[in-house]
Amino acid sequence: MKAKDVLLTGLMLFSLFFGAGNLIFPPYLGMEAGTAVWPAICGFIVTGVGLPLLSVAAAAFMKDGLRSLGDAAHPLFSFCFSLAVYLAIGPFFGIPRAASVAYEIGAKPFFTDGGAATMWLFTGFFFALVYWLSLNPSKLVDRIGQWLTPMLLLSIAVLCVAGLLRLDDPQAAPTEKYQSAPLVKGMLEGYLTMDTIAALAFGVVVIHALRDRGVNHPSVQARATIQAGLIAGAGLALVYAGIAVMGARMAGTGSFENGAELLSYVSALLFGSGGKVLLGVIVTLACLTTAVGLVAACAQYFQSLTPSISYRTYVTTLIVFSFLMSNLGLNELISISVPVLTMLYPLAIVLVSLSFFRRWNRGSTKAYRLALLLTGLFSLEDGLDAIGLETDWLDPLLSWSPLFSVGLGWIVPAFVGAALGMAWDRVMLDRRKRAA
Image 1 (cartoon, one colour):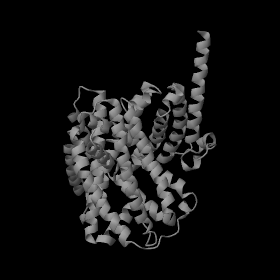
Image 2 (cartoon, rainbow, N blue to C red):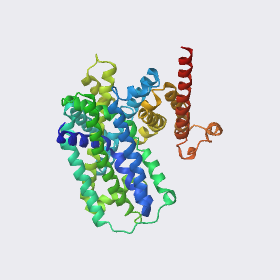
Image 3 (cartoon, rainbow, N blue to C red):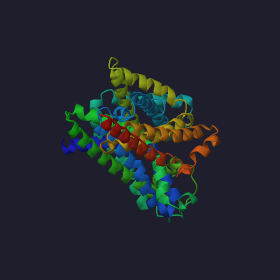
Image 4 (cartoon, rainbow, N blue to C red):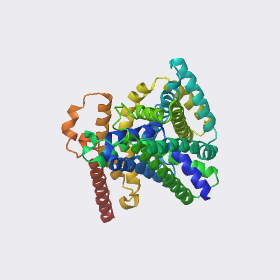
């Protein structure tokens, strides 16, 4: 691998990760954290960058990516979990959301009457472009890494540099949310980006891109994927820090409901009417590259399940379905998908974490099964709560776990389940040895 190829692959991976959500969360965090912005954004980077990089590394060392991770528990679980992940990050939520957010922030402000017809027209053009970029995955590195990512980075750099130079309002005191343990609060915010799940799919996209460039040796693929991940991670960390500090400098100027409103206000403040154009370019590019990566990842996955159906057919099907879903509206998409993602995300983290200890746990299937079973109980409760169903009857069974009140009650049970599973397997192995 040449250094230029690794760099371009890293830039491609940065663009695949950096969607509109990644652009909106950090400035709002900065505004709420105020003078505690640095510990808060460091926590955000730990989970919003660190966990996705671990997922990319895990996928790089696995022959079939997410499916290989799940096979350690059971092939049936692997199939069901992989299918659920790809459907969630793909046609049911991830891909349609990219188009919806691009329209809401990048296009709608320019129309006096942003009705349904305007949205259908915009999303039609958006998905036509996604279709063209996704058709040939071997050119993703060149098309995204060499062209779209530099445009995205340049646009973000213009906004961040202007904000850091011209916004000199004194930072406000942290809101109640960040007055105590801002580092931990930042970590919880980064956890909500959901990039760890997408990283399992993007790692496979990187492997396919490397194979198309003639890199076929597994160890070289793994090394190049990790290097590309570090480049993408460095870029994400810098962008997150820049826009978080910019948000912190806006903390005393007024109240904003979300990061999108804050960014719109800052863009208009810094550049006037041209600020809308700049923000529209940033958001549209961010959503476009993420959608392309998700379409390519999903099409490659579904083709691996049914090789008789072509990659092009899957791309076409994904595009048409996502186009229809995107026109349901952003709020409807979020209400449908958040409970599903809430249930899947902890399971993905546990799978990735256990994959780095396979030598130590000797591939213990019971370690995987007990850890995932206990994690699943807690994530199911969180998912039902996100749907709005009554879950008070579960609280006596689960509230004993540390961090339960902040939605991370699954962490300690997962660790305990893995330890008990390994101990169980070792006891059974010793019995078999004595019996032999």
